[in-house]
Image (cartoon, rainbow, N blue to C red; front, side, top):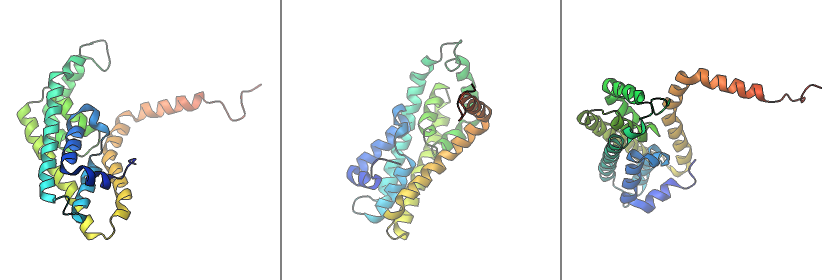
Length: 220
């Protein structure tokens, strides 16, 4: 869980802080650790309880702009600088063939990937960067970037707002709700990793267990 009260942070930073956090989490590589889904949901609940601090329509517009602008910066940085990393044909990760595979993927599934990535932590930060690195056509990227950013901003903030207005003492339930949002947001990524790499994961676990000494110590 977060080492601070998210609702208190939102009250303190206001619109400017929310805009900055969402922009950084969406488009800057180091922003992957920042709260995204939980921030929007909590901001919606704060708007419901403290309308003098935050207005829901204003917040949705600002957060949509922040999300779209952040992804656009991520695309630009990937296009301008990311490709320079993939110049070593002997490397597993930095092989130029990785970019070719990414380009083919984004040509086929790029639109869906950009929209769905918006709702998945970490992937939300990396997807626009990879789209730029793989030379996804910007017009296509921009269209789905706008769609994903608007759906994300409307969906999570409105859900938080509705619960904040309909559930008495919502503060008592914010921590478990935020925990559930974090888990549900990360679940698609975890399922994908498990499906694609379960044999490697299980193999590594077996090797690790095999190296551990038995409880009775070595045989004499």
